[in-house]
Amino acid sequence: MGILSRASYVIRSKLNAVLNRAEDPTETLDYSYEQLRNELQDVKQGIADLTTQKKRLEIQKRRLEENVEKHNEQARQAVEQDREDLARQALEKKKQKMTQIEELESQISDLQSQQDTLVEQKDELQKQIEQFRTKKETMKARHEAAKASARVNEAMTGAGDEMADVNQAIERAEERTEDMEARAQAMDELREDGVLEDQLSDKSSLERELEDVQQQGSIDAELDTLKAEMGKGEADGGSTDAESVSESDLEQELADESTQVDVDESEVEAELDELKEDEK
Image (cartoon, rainbow, N blue to C red; front, side, top):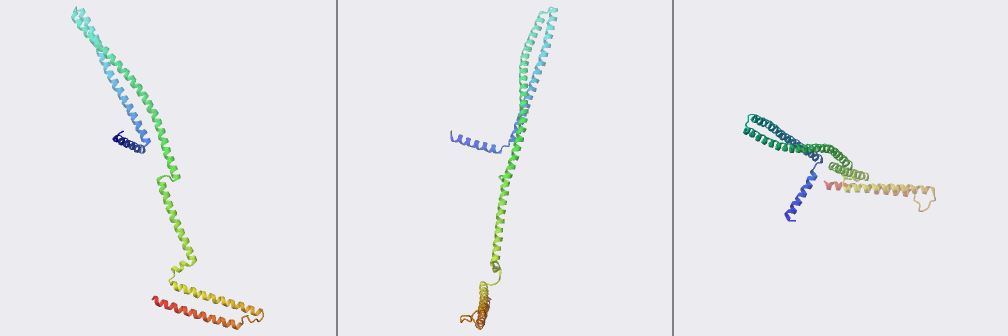
């Protein structure tokens, strides 16, 4: 196989594949049915033309038969008048007409045979067309049912193009919703941990740290007070041991701690004022 032959074969195969994909079975069936009807119409037209031709020959035959009778009568009249020459001419014409009649009868017989054959073919073709029409309608109904079933299955399974787009839209919406939910949960956790409020506050990180230190100092002072109270309880209920803490010692210690706390707070306030001045 040459290059051109192979290329032509490939092109034809590609075109055939494209046509097969583009072909609509229902349209093909309707077109085939119309073609058969056209063929039936052509057969009927052929039968009509053949019948017309046969009728013309039959009319011509009748005219020749009339001429035969006429020439026969002329021959008789010529014999009665002792005109054998005229009688002979009349008989010769009669003979010619009879020969033509025989030829016409043969042609008419052939045309009749052709007509009978065409009528049989027409009846058979018409029968086939009726059968094809029934089968065509059945196939079209099956094809439409199959298309509807395929569309339903595609819609149910999401295999169709439109359903694929819908599924993609749903997936994108789910992803965005999950992102928003995760973001909302993260914001809740940050707010519970106090990070969100710190970020929204207008205080600097140093100020927040100093406040934490001050709060821690207050907690330490409260803890010392609690310890002192517990020590006082032990002194009242037990012996006067040298290691026990007296009431005056506790008061003195608490006073020292309060003074220390006040000093720390004043130092913190002074540092905060300096930081504010620097920021300005």
